[in-house]
Image 1 (cartoon, rainbow, N blue to C red):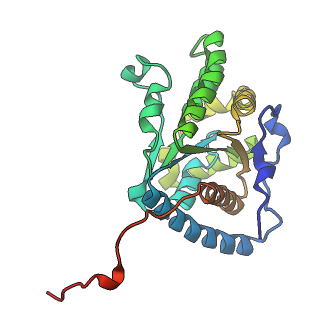
Image 2: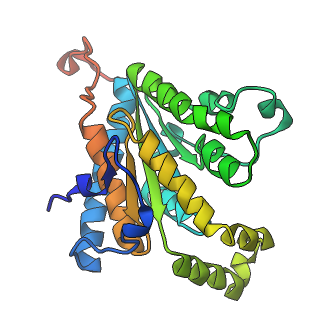
Length: 271
């Protein structure tokens, strides 16, 4: 079964209103069927990761953004977790350090971009500088306004140098966020994931939605598209993300390097 991934892609120039996009969808699949397809695609993903490393000419950068409790950690654990950890680098971008603030906002991001042969995963990213920065007025409006084009130029430059980029916005509703917060409070082993600051951020839900609308609309390009993933049906979320990553890798024209080895002429001694 071929999933229609373009249905989730933000096309360049689209005017985005994520409030009109479903947060929950099952792709007209049963959970059992979806999990069977997912298992097969994870096998493909493992093979493609090895091929990416062997080819060693390109890299893949995967960006995850979401509201709090949107499922970034869970998605990364389920989709990226099964891969060879030696070929994957996951970066979680928190508030910048003083050294990072002393440089341009993309400085710390560029340092974390995957090298050839590797998959890089950003759990939050440079988009925080047009999301949190906009909502909390951490930079002047005219500076934030410039950042959209700076981000596009940065990403297009990476693509030109061989780093493919996929960006996922994991889409949840405010009601679902409350449900996930309550789950954290009801499970002692999840208490560490809850902060009272999360509630302050929740009060700005509408402002964050507006900021995401702008970021998705202005920064979904042919080179580095955004995909809005209905994230409340988590098994379908996992399948969809895995499918999109596989399609990207399959389209990268990866090849095993040629060698001059003739296996028939090689004798491995017993001692």
